[in-house]
Length: 166
Image: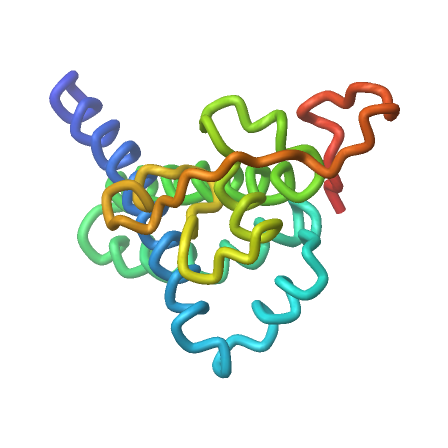
């Protein structure tokens, strides 16, 4: 495979990563439009906890798996690049979601951990991103908030890897 083919597959990977973040944003936003159809999500808000990175990842994979299987009809290379981009985002998003429940101050890639703020400040109509905040900014649902963590300041500092994994 030449450089052009590799570049094309790289673009599929990156495009799929970005597309996956958009799908995540809209699925989460739709759960707030029709909460009667998403009792599990209403329960998630009531409990304000994540399932653990691995269980979150498995939930995201239910959405990820069918598309690359369809793409196999056209190209196994494109299908693989799409699958890898989607899985990479699913891993990142599952981790970011759990991190915002367990240790939101460690979300260094966002000025404000939008999912933590979404839960903590009851923002049913704002801040739908789990892993990134750019779709909230683009679609006008980003609501900047002076946020404080509920982590006890007397507790020892935790690393970004100290989250619920299982």
